[in-house]
Length: 458
Image 1: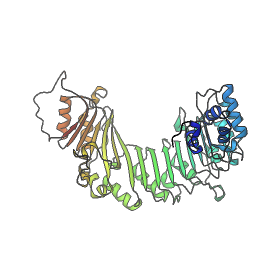
Image 2: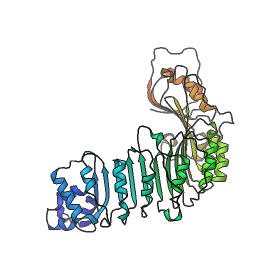
Image 3: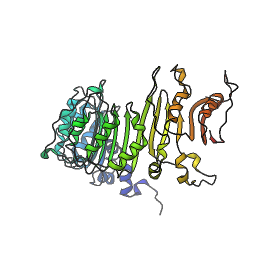
Image 4: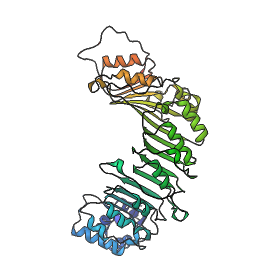
């Protein structure tokens, strides 16, 4: 049976359509259309999402619709997303959060000032179904302890993301006591998107023993003795993502031991000059003994090149990241040259363009993983900026860790420079180019190059 009019669509279809629109837009367009839509809008089956962006036009019509929703449909509001600005301050001041918001599950505040944030969060305890809270603030005061105290009072909360930005992020502190049994909350997903020292982290998570998912930044230069931190038990924690600064591998191992968790997913990005992070055998021993249930491993380590300064070099046995331990788990090492950085990363295997036959069938990768190491080049002439550092320096550093079998160049390259690079990488099987130029002002002559035939994609 064909539908000749939009009004013949079932109510369920309209509910799905309304899910894509802001509550005030729905109210403005349909509230006075006819009796049916009036009933639809006031039905308990329809839950509203209020989104006020930075450039929201708060004209008289909009404000009237907004006031009508708060007056008649407060119990249908599912989420409120506010980008704080001069345009939205008058709306913020009109919010009176109480138990009548009995369907409100999610609150997001962007660019909210700390004093406004504190006044709002202190009232959120009245919300019976607030499960998710996202905060993006400019901390005029650098101590975020008071805000965390208010957050941990929200007993229904399951998810919290707290981002704090300022011109001097390293000065942010969190003054909190260790939680007592009466202060424990129900948070399961915690994202700390601001600088946080390890001792502050352990204090914060003392309030969240049910934690399953933890992500945090450690971009602080405060010297903390990790060995002196009291261990904590997070038996439900299975996901950990950390971005750490100036933490040696020895200290990282101590940190993981003190969590007492059963991680299944670990993501680690580290900014420190400690070549021990590139010791595959040490990682293998650590994971087998301390993280035996780990299923997915993401890792990023950056070697920084500077003028007249030799980066730390690895002097162990090469190609240890293709041992049986790594192959069985399909965790693949990759390298990337990006401006003045050589980035080593490990991640779960994903099939690539060269791993298909002409019939688009997957090649048997069990025999290919041991030769899956890829080097990506975003820069081929670092000497343009670093007079004493050349592309050879980056490649030779990578070759102390692993042989390279696949090469991708994401920038324009002259054929003579490509020949130089391929001369350093005789085991390359595949080559992917962004742009190749045949001519160059000064081409090197007289050097013979010998390399295997490779699959080429451009």
